[in-house]
Length: 417
Image 1 (tube, rainbow, N blue to C red):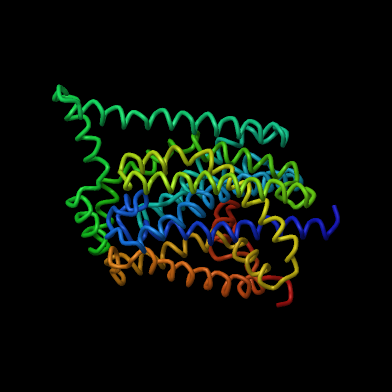
Image 2: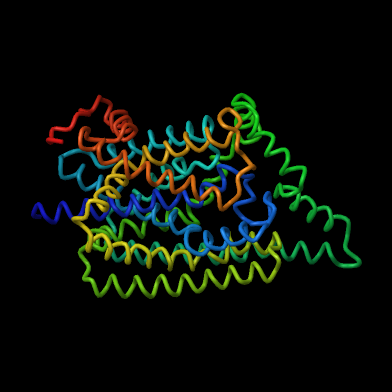
């Protein structure tokens, strides 16, 4: 493999990761500054103004779940890269991999309990440990297996969540039994969308750090474990697909432009139209909560994969075309320190919105939150490249690598700035 190919591989993966870590904040920003269910519906926890509805619609169609899917795909690809490098260097791939996943799980738990409830690192660590079993599969087999698992899981979720409508219908019957009414009421109360629940959640996150910490270790203590159910339904299949796309060279820029163009245009067009249709359905149903839950958590599953594939293909074309542009190198740098950017964003945003910081929780509109997103994007692009001109790794990348290898890694870059 020549130096040009190696460099192109790094640029493509790093730039894709840079786009993903910036894009994922577009959706996460809502869960930093609003009650959890505000993510599901534009009329929960907010006034439901035209601005709220418009911002939710744009976010849902263009960002919701796609960036998380791309992030998961790239995690699988990067994991495969690390495994191959370990084998090439005469190290034990299993030892290297599981050491990395162990410390990633520790980072994830610390992130959840001491900072923000929306952590995905613990889920990634457990899922990453699982997909190691498939490392020797061929690229084609990984892609096919991942797609089949993803589609079957998505359909299973659709059928499972349809029971919500069944419970609603049973409770609405004139001769409904008290048990049916109680079961439906219990389900709705657990969703936490009542004014009392919204006010309580808002009060919690506008309070001090101590109160939030106590809540994490009492009411939410098992949440990281409960979130692992997403592993077999979404994260593991996506990681498998990412591993396969790495092995086939698709994520390394080795496919021809015609292929990227075909998948990019069709994936984005078909996925975008399906998401637009779901957004129209949401508005037509007046953003009914059960409809919104099914739209965002079930019906959007398969369109999400289609659109994520389209996005990756179009981004590969963009990266190849602008590979030498200074801005693309800044995006790639942001991707190289994605771990630091991801956790650093949590530090900044919880400070901005939680009571132990500026306390803006629940007081900034959806559209105004986009300004925080754009500001964070600018910060990532500004600091990442100068840092990497001086140091080998991002601060948290260095810590993760040092812990996983059980020795302090050299930090200072040997390259001239």
